[in-house]
Image 1 (cartoon, helix red, strand yellow):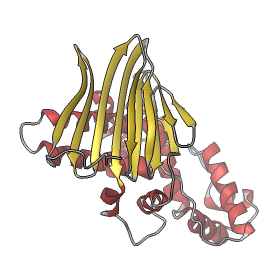
Image 2 (cartoon, one colour):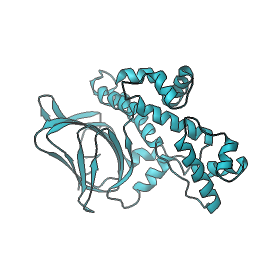
Image 3 (spheres, rainbow, N blue to C red):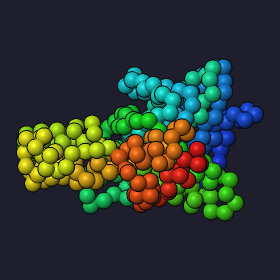
Image 4 (cartoon, rainbow, N blue to C red):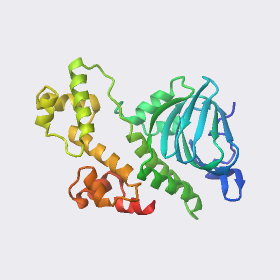
Length: 308
């Protein structure tokens, strides 16, 4: 079997047209060693299938902008149906699969493939970070496993456009594209809601899970720590300690993360202004919301909204 990442003699940034017909295309771009993306834009009456049969350990992120596609794993005979406006993160330690883009409708799909040796460069001393979790998963014998899926947010669309557009750069297209791809990976991987797998007591798990459930129900106007502790049947000291131990973040940071993720989804909707989105997720002042959003994502919500 060939390697997906080492089947070209030219190791530099390389664009390959796998399919081209008028404005329709399937383009493969080798950004750098271990980093490849597919830019797919089709309007066909019949289905189109891409076959991957390789020996590589990789994560890949599929973002379906329009249309739908089906990924079939020929090794386990399982399949995954991917819906419009959703993004999916997969892990695979070897591949014999078919990616079928369904015909009869316009399809806009972006796929970023990331090798395990590329991910290995960024491993952390913190074993509970998403990058460590994903690398460990790739060392297992997993032919194809869906790790995470959710609706595609505005920042993901913004970064995908930057990655794809880099191929039009006259200078340093590889460096620009890799930089944007890393930004995209950081964002998508940070959406993983991982719970630390060390030993916990039943009390710790129960209290932390109750607190998380309450926060998710009312993250716009969450209860105070003292009130949240009362609702969970404990005191504020235990609550903060257990929550941090289980989810590796503070309650305040988790509330902010939840608010920003919701805002990121709402920014795709043209009917809402930035001020309305800020209010919708629990921020009274647009300026405060914009400052926190920029500090977290590196782009202001109004610029993100205007780019879509």
